[in-house]
Image 1 (cartoon, rainbow, N blue to C red):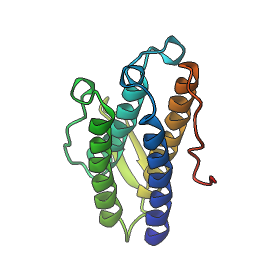
Image 2 (spheres, rainbow, N blue to C red):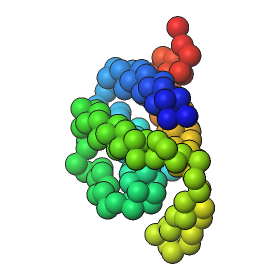
Image 3 (cartoon, helix red, strand yellow):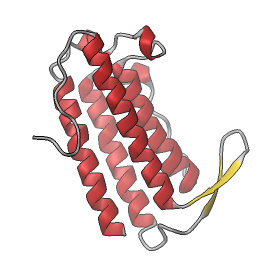
Length: 158
């Protein structure tokens, strides 16, 4: 399963890179423009939210490490956001390598509010990448609302 998840994450990276390449065509000020239709979030803030969710689930919750979250005021351009995702990729590689022989083993996870849940590393991996795809769709939708014509950023694209 480890090899399959590595491959699946590579597909996620391909889709993410298509989104980032598309975002290069968006004016920098539009990447930072909050939209009321998406809870006054901006495209950049949603991208950082996704990166921080990777940190929360993979590092801080499952591996019980204490990684700092990425701050919006320190990542105000696409180059900085891309650099954040370079760190996310390293984190994902560490996570998959750490659990490569126990991806289906349930783990007790304590949330910041003290509540607990039991999930396997496979479930957390799946949650993290589907969460990214959910917000990727919102980012594309936001760009459309700002007058841009999005490109195909799906895993299967031409």
